[in-house]
Amino acid sequence: MRANLVVPIIGVSADQQFWQVNTALGVVWVSNREVVASNAESVPVVDVGLIGQATVGSVVRAGPGPQAARLATLPRGSQFYILGTNADGSWLNILYRLGEGWIA
Image (cartoon, rainbow, N blue to C red; front, side, top):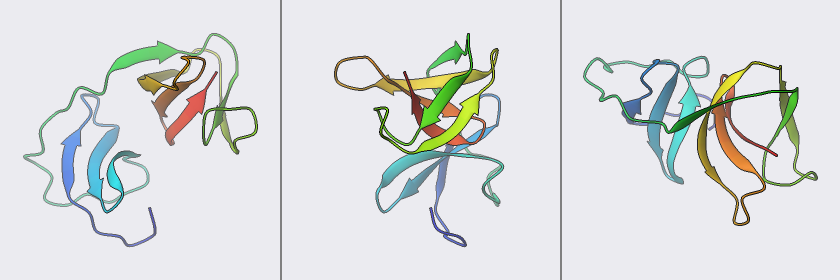
């Protein structure tokens, strides 16, 4: 999302680390570190999904595949939400402390 973009908040994760927002491109999750929320007291808690934990240092990528841009590395023991998988199930779409990404 671009800076200073105003979007409606439609949900919050149970741990209040992520906001679910509605953008022109669809519904996405953003880290509470990346946004300033206002008038969000009555936003419903939304079930984000399964929780995973990195067993080794996992590279987070912008898309499913080794050629996708590298976003971060999850240290061993890091927890994340599992949002889904790619078509063949070889990559997980995750929500981690810095936002959304993909891990193998």
